[in-house]
Length: 386
Image (tube, rainbow, N blue to C red; front, side, top):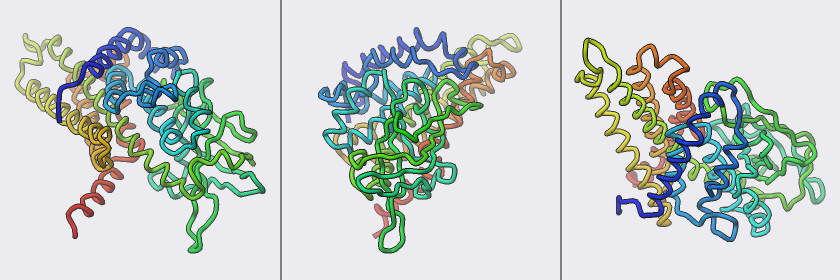
């Protein structure tokens, strides 16, 4: 592997970092306090070409590699996880299933519209009783002539309720096989479909400026052409999509850890106790050295996973590893940042307080840390046990 970023990747890092510092940072605290999704910032990210970055140009995308996209998410999360979540969820979970599994007609219908920042798409997998166990889906699709009638609900769906939300991919149970096991089918459902409703979720601890929704389907009729892939491929489609999504959540963890680290080290050089900066105390310096080393370790693992994907090599194990370690390091570094800030780290006037809250979802969303370890363990069993 070549560890040096190419010119395009370096340009993406500097451009997105400048945008995040200039456009997002001044608004991040206020948007968090108001729990307000920013249509304006989302459209600006679209104008920069951050939506659909990895899509071919024929579908309105930028034709970039995976690492370029991951760097963009990382740089947004360095400043504000809410805006990073909007980008990551839309690119990986929103348009990903359509691009990788959709028919050519579906790609032409949706992808150009979803690459501009004017529209967002959700990933309807999680339900009140189906989180880590995605096969616990209760939403049902019953065939009726050349249509399906869908009833059920989804929860914790990002990018599904704002004025930019255009629809969602929805996993359903569409029948049973000969052994009585559920058959899963995924549908692409436009928001204006009769019987479809999206309700914003409030009172979140984290990612308060991102759009999170509950979805309800009440006798919702959808034609067969709304099926993504084929009948019975629903679970496969959604789980393979999560492999890609793990890279973006890992990027959020990496970016948040970097941002928290920078907040902590700056404060440690400014804050004086006993007549000298707290950074000059060996304990603080050692802890910052450990944090910097772990961040660099996480970055190398994540970038390797991206390299594997871009070179069409198996990457699912490394994606799970990256998601796990980046999430855990984000938690550790954010906690260290609060500790170094002392009592001020507990006050909303300081950005580290928001970082501390925002990191907590990373060990839960798109597969908990426990699920990542389970996934990794299964790959290890296949590799080492004959």
